[in-house]
Amino acid sequence: MTESTPRTPDKYKAEIGITWLIVGIPLLYGLFNAITAALQLFTT
Image (cartoon, rainbow, N blue to C red; front, side):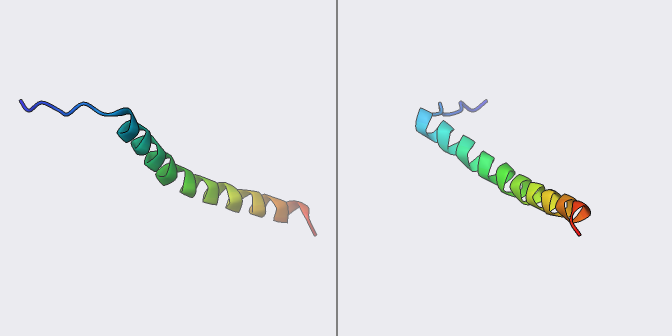
């Protein structure tokens, strides 16, 4: 087996930040579209 290199706190924080961007951007886009579609139902 190969030994994995230990993660440094900075690298760990960078991975979490990148992951949140990958997940968060489409999530916010979908939420924005859902809210605008719902508002169209209740406005004339």
